[in-house]
Image (spheres, rainbow, N blue to C red):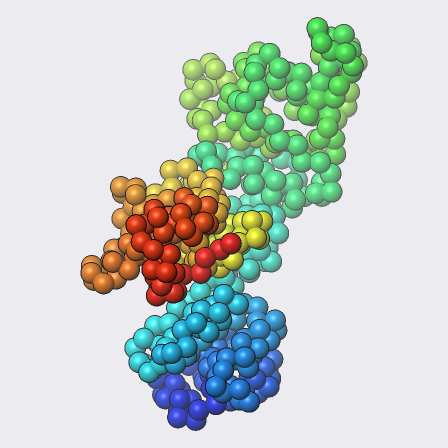
Length: 449
């Protein structure tokens, strides 16, 4: 059974919680010192904490200090603060200080079990994400644990030590450049340059000089000899993205480079040997292009010595939350936001969305949600799903819950539109500032500033 630490100086409450949470291996502590010792010894994933600990039972100073010590020792531990009915303010302080959630007495077994179960589930999700970053595969940037991604990681690891030319196939936004970089990082060339060039984003008249470089005086404006991307990747890896958009007349020159490992700069007469690993990618059907004579057949077979298919995000259900949490952690740190995870409706929205833009769309959604969020959890509204038709995440039919959700979203939206000015936010909502503060306290909103 999972270990659960209960910190409370009331023996009666300890007994009641232990009985209510019988599905867990319960460890008991009654003060800050014994609690910290238990955390060090047993390393529980979830802790329930009464803020009123001795020698300051009447206040929350000792409990808040215990919370700080626990999170310093084990920052990923989920701490659930258990408080009295008149101690909501200190409970919110604890959440702002890093507690996972709070629960007000009297204890109801069904409710406390749900909160504890969710805490364990979140801890597991976060650990899976951390594991993905530390075990084989995550060190080369491919995150996820779906079967398709495990297979992709395995293929990357196998081809990386070789010089085989790989063709990456996948929809836009699936992570073709990330996969190409993974091939580079897993190879012996990882300490050399990784150079990426998008063949579709550079005008046809400039692409040749971008790839092969040019000599001084080769054309108007060529004031000095300049190396191309191929030479810049010397010893490393060259990633040719959207190779299907490469002009037909340039394909022959690329084929010669791939076969001979030599290039000629524009306006040059000297062949230059280059040692470069090449990885290509496209979202087009090259076989159809070969049949239509818009892509050279010999080049197709040269760049597709091995083909790696990158699955779309809609086929990676189990990876969506892992990737979302990864991006959330990344942007929360970058933008210095106190955002820890996703609310229930946020998780439901992430799961329900079809992700036509794949990982790039998910990354952008999470990035904007971190900026928009006014609490410690990202909601469906923060993700931009609330007003979207087709976001079929679960809606609660309980009128009280629906009203609370609507008021919470309205407050968050007004706060965002007013750029944090509480007077303007209250005007937008048509209420007074005291009423706004009362609602923020009522719904336990933590406003980022």
